[in-house]
Length: 418
Ligand code: HEM
Image (cartoon, rainbow, N blue to C red):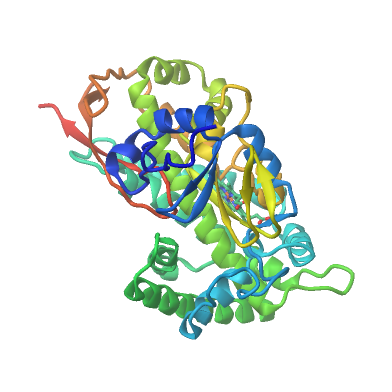
């Protein structure tokens, strides 16, 4: 255990600095070894970095994604949110991610009745078609931003398809989602908060109208299924349905964009692994799991401390906030698999591993198309020969922080060789 005087910053934990974001792993290794529980006054988080601790805390009811089921803001020693933030919080708290049992259990059961593995499986062909279209556009284009041209549009299109948002309205989704996520920046400014509130109102109004339309005239989509679902006389309220749609869009695409960026960035730095994938597509499912472990797309999740407790000799009071560093836990040498995500993990039908809207298909598709090409690397920000007709070059890692330590996506350019 390190002395009280050593701070997270002194150990190198600086989630807003590009150099830290580019490679946080040496700092995490030191934290795991010397300070597995470390208070960070920069973010007001107790940082937890070892796999065993993160895994155990995620399953422990003494910690919550929210605390309002157990205590008031005052009891937790936290300020109440300003009243004008209400539309944002109402929307977020209507989605299962920010619920705790028994609400979480009830709503998740209802959503799972509508959002079935079969519904996801039925999308497989459509998703492959979307992916092929995006890849075709990239191949042969002179200069391409992998994030903007592939990583972002695919998950948004897939989720729109899944929900049943008409094609003419799909361009609205990503901007709404991005605006809503502004509230999750570290210490969001009033301007960011206002934009998040406005987008929450607009998106809610849109989904309310859509769900009423689908309730009256159901189609073969998730909004219709959720509007119809009935379990022992119980059904989703309109707010719960809307909250779930927004959650699916936000949770479903931010992580996959990051996963795609980080995954490709890793493959470009390990060209021999990319070669193995191209040669044997049966390795892709494992590769996706391993890429998620190796450069975890969502680096940190938070939990509220609902009662005083002690960990590795540090007393952590009720009202504190834990920063569970998945990125570090997944590099702990003790475990062999990705961090198990507790009761909020997106279960069998939603887990990236089994769903065709997963990175699996995208990696497969992108690997498959330029088959036979060669990739070489020349250092971390080097250039890459991706296909015989072109060259890929990593130009920057944009520090787009969502949560405290989200790893930034990579931006890629292809330069046609003449
Ligand atoms: C690489 C891709 C993904 C990663 C790394 C990821 C990661 C996570 C994590 C870590 C959680 C738990 C958060 C917590 O406990 O605080 C979570 C929850 C969730 N994710 Fe994902 N996710 C991914 C893709 C998706 C997709 C594609 C969807 C849906 C289309 C989705 C929907 C959800 C939902 C609905 C929850 C909340 C579950 C609940 O509270 O019961 N995720 N995800």
